[in-house]
Length: 521
Image: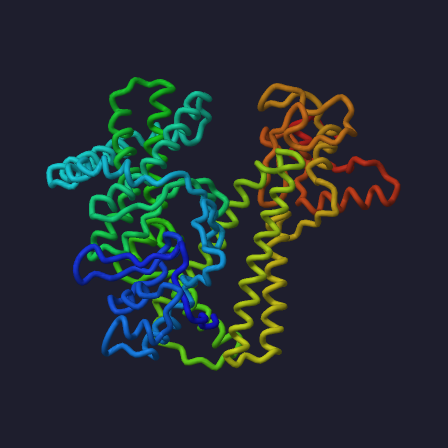
């Protein structure tokens, strides 16, 4: 970034936050997001900038030993954070913010006043007696979970009543809000101030958030770790209460819902401890190591290693193997979370008609743009560090081919040709010819009266089909006379149609099936 033109001043959204205790770090923030930890001397220089003074005047205001060169060097060192404003169009705090790689935050309100009113409650919860009670409750929840393993397996494997799912969904919604308020309450207890609370799309998954970045002003690492882990502890507490209470509830739909809610709370608490995504576990690890922007630094270290050995960059690698592998794990985890987000939401959006298709198209365009931008920046950085054009071209071709292969695999399997007809329709025709009658699994007619009508799974009178390692198979055991792979069935169908044959493959049943069905075929 080019150095700012004097005179300079801080942007309207920038702030220089004082330490909470003497000797603590000063925090330079932009829009409520900490950008850097600075010393008291740097903070004094930034506070003296008013958009009118020159470096000489600022040095005179600060007194000896400051010089105009020192002031200009300080301003240049923090210019990359984007905290300076030319005064023509002051920056404003945005209610909708985008965070890389794929997070959109919508601010709802400032929770500071509400959390200050709850500060005495946090003081009570921090007492030793309260901690002992919390550990006892957690132990009771674990015991309740282990003694209810058969019921848990039943609840997770069989459908429940609709009212049970609605109640669990409402309870999880409220629990997520309490989770975020737990972060804010812990920060308020230690003297910080939560800036905002709202909702967000985190890797295309809806969630709440509470901005507790003011925690970097806390002087103790342990305090910052407690703030990060306060949310998962809320879910652990709620889940323990539910799992203890279900032991005293008679068998009913309500008990099933309470049991499911307790298990989900435990799962959410454990998943939030995953350290390779910007979840609570990552923030706790970053706070314990006292290393701001750990994920970005680790991915930069991984990019240097990839550039050195794959692109031939002329850089000297530093001895930070653990940081490098943490960056690799973070990169892979980010891709996995994005894939899960697309897999969960795209089928839902596609059911909304044209509007849903537009949203899916926009999401795909956004993903392509972000991926292309990251790749361009990576190759540009490699070129500046001495990578040859041939190596960059070769790696670009390999990366593009790999991405195309992954996209095809996600769309239709490793060997699936989307131009071929749905092989399940072909197998449906076969079964309708060879084995007419009722389904032994559900008792309904398996196929419509016209056997040549295409019957994809889920649209016909009977849809008990499931994929296997070798192809498509019927769930009731008396289906197709022969199991074909997806492409085998589809290509067989195309060959018969090209030769002028019928639309139904003529497949002979196995000998065992001839005996079982009385020699049909």
